[in-house]
Length: 287
Ligand code: FAD
Image (tube, rainbow, N blue to C red):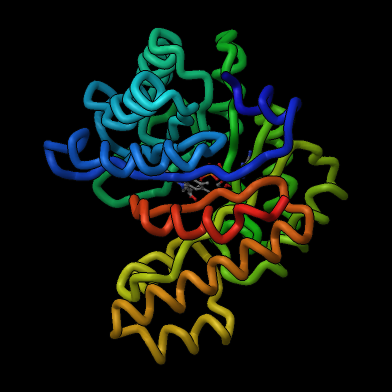
């Protein structure tokens, strides 16, 4: 089912993002995670796509099929366009149709050394436009950036660019992770003022791995609030303590978002089923 259609009949709930494991046994590696995530009854599970990989070796699609066919949860495949031609995008879109996968997160992808860019797409709105022009009946989602995308000179221009994606056909937006909800609330009100009316789901991630946070935050533009830094400083080298403190931070972020009327919660699960389960358990009586 298309996620945007689902959201017309009921409020957005929880969704998870996972990534394809690198090993050749990726399907076997990810299945125990998918099994637990599916049991938590999410609206959908999205699967990242490594920009620059071959469309013929599409682990994202394989995992999406597993999620849909065996676990009966809606998958959303991520699709990046900077490194692909229209013909390559056609291959992936045809596969989606063949396998009955109706949800796609249309992204530009990051510029990366060693991954040559092709000329057909420069921005995500062009990918959305292209998918719509080909007549695919997909729910097309887009990425958005509460603190502004790193390449954009200012937040106002970023929102103007975001609207191009919605005007092109994105019917759902999923945010980049953030650790300070204030950025998200401010972003949503600016988006609404600009005439963006589609569902905007906040994306949040647990602070349970110091090395990962240090690696990711400079590339995704999320700033680290003082309360967050304190946790990292005090518990960064103690795995179990960091897990407890990080989960508590994540839950308090999610509770604040829900109390503020947030349109769902998208958990960057990092393939950690234990994190997803603890979050869902903590929110089970909240509506
Ligand atoms: P765009 O919307 O194209 O924006 C990129 C930049 O260009 C922004 O600065 C924007 O302001 C500007 N811009 C946009 N449109 C125009 C225009 N028409 N004219 C001028 N300027 C414009 N990356 C992966 O490789 N794989 C993944 O699976 C993946 N999943 C993600 C999931 C989510 C929820 C999010 C938020 C990001 C994800 N990313 C992923 C990262 C994403 O690919 C990068 O952030 C990338 O740098 C931007 O992608 P985008 O689709 O937001 O780009």
